[in-house]
Image (cartoon, rainbow, N blue to C red; front, side, top):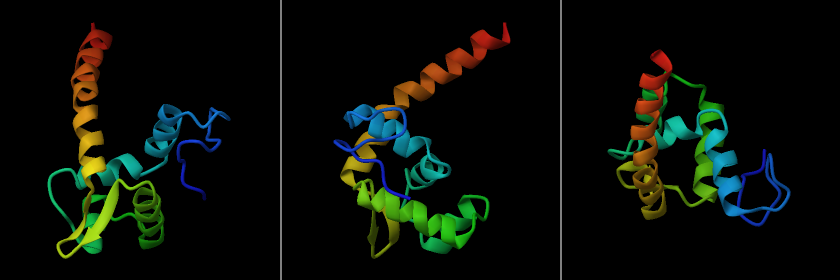
Length: 109
């Protein structure tokens, strides 16, 4: 499975526009969960696997490879962690989290 990156065709867009690439990347199963779990601290492979409800090692390895190729995750002495770019993405998504809470409230009414 190829990693969605800007300037390459991705699901939903042949133009390779960057916003479509990031939506494709984050929309792939488990990628957003891995980012979420690494948002607060570095985790070893086993710790990350446990935090992700025991996803299979092969799937986790594939997701880590994708996110590493996209320069959102890297390996450090402490384990896997978000890169500066990955942290920036998570900070950018925080307002969307707030919007989603409001959306959920509106749908309940």
